[in-house]
Length: 175
Image (tube, rainbow, N blue to C red; front, side, top):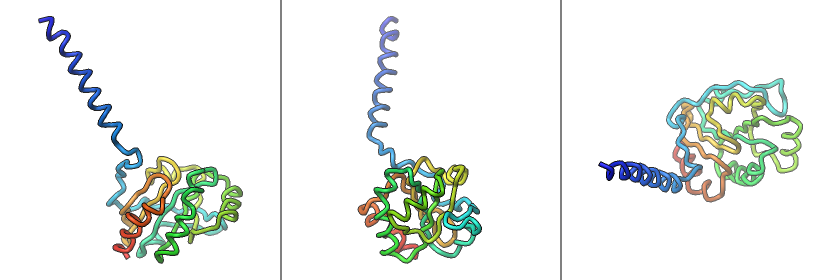
């Protein structure tokens, strides 16, 4: 009877070790998004460059587009910025920026310094639209098809390798 008393905690401990080792092998950037295959969350937000105009997901229906969540305070956004320029040069799509929890003047200065690859930029000052889209942090990138369905999500900065291997092939299939 005392054997089971000592054996049970050992089995539980070994089970926890197995779960921990399995968890350490997972890539934290591969967080499954519940939005994949679902209608993109709708938003109507002011534009960064002219708040008298708005950006809306409904006006993008009928075209394939990419949403990139970014901020001027985001160091990783600077890392991916040239990749976004490469994306719009490679494929004729609308690249929509979602400026996330940022200061308007800082965002405009940042774009003047590094260039503006976006067709439109929506301002999500309070981060509520980011919550609707399941944003964990910036940068994040989504591919939306012509029916308004989210087909892809990338967490973290896009790299040229991700662009070549994942994003461009998907966009070419959707176009």
